[in-house]
Image 1 (cartoon, rainbow, N blue to C red):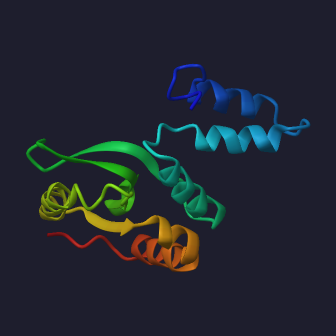
Image 2: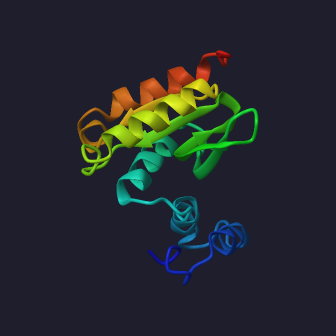
Amino acid sequence: MAVASGIADPAALRRHAEATNGRAGSRRLHSLALLAAPAESPMETRLRWLLIQSGLPHPEVQIDLRDAKERFVGRADLYYRSARLVLEFDGGNHRERLVEDDRRQNLLINAGFRLLRFTAADIHHRAGVVVAQVRSALSDPIRHV
């Protein structure tokens, strides 16, 4: 919230966390700095935190994606650039946006991106499966379309 409202700057938080390394509260500050990237929903942040806490690399957040001709094809909730892996959180309004989401998914896949979709139920009740699927996708070589 503080980042989204402009009160806190993620880069400044990271710099301060590095400068206070080893001091009381520095672990919390490091955690806060990790979570300060501008996710569009609390569940996207939970998904990202689950992945980080499970030892996976930090995904990029809210990244615009383009095809080979530099046309915009979508925005990733979370993105692993080296694996061209897009992670999407499908929130409660997903049913109303299903057609739009399906069209965007087709554009992403045709542009050579890989895509995994997760829901709140996945994050809360199948966290191990979520982590295993992401870990597996990250370990697979990129398949070119």
